[in-house]
Amino acid sequence: MDIKVRVGRIVAGLRKLYPKAKVELDYKTPLELLVATILSAQCTDKRVNMVTPALFARFRTARDYAEARPAELEAMIHSTGFFRAKASSIQAAAAKMVSEFKGEVPGTMDDLRTLKGVGRKTANVILGAVFNKAEGIVVDTHVKRLAFRMGLSDCKDPEDIEAGLMALLPRKDWIFFSQAMVWHGRRVCSAASPDCPACSLKGFCPKRGL
Image (cartoon, rainbow, N blue to C red; front, top):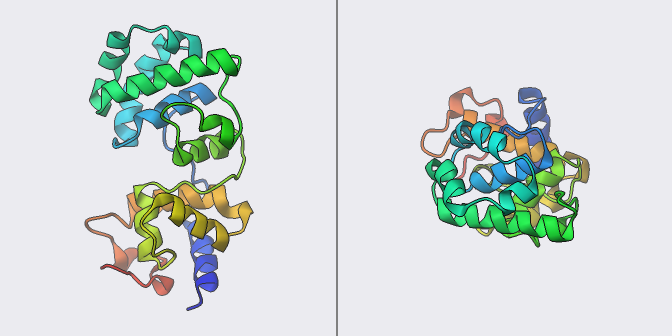
């Protein structure tokens, strides 16, 4: 099957399965999503969502995070793993927002990537969910796995995978595709035991690596 045809059918299938696919991190403000996304590195969204209610109640502004005692912040995010590095990233990002962006989360890829702890993946999450800007495609562990299994990418580097997917998909689908692929990876196409028999995308998925 031609790859353009395959990707079109995958997007159509995902829209039927997950018409309301969105970020599954809990947040109310751009700052909360930024912090939650940094915490989600090598950690499940479920765990992050258990930690953030108390965190968001304690720290409400970028200045709050920038001026926090590192030990207190580290203790509150300890269970998300790599807590010292994450606390350092959050505080440095917050300090830069205070000094250069009037305490607000910036709304461009270039500006977001000047913040410590923010790479293309995190920036794409924020731009899509908060600003409704399709600047790229989120490539997390689920999207990376599914892009290979579905025959959409042979690359291993996330930025190379992203570039290939962006070339295949119309920009209007980028934000939806990012989140729907994550949902499918969590609900059906898991790493260890994908439920291929029950998958409605199986008719046009080559099931590579399985």
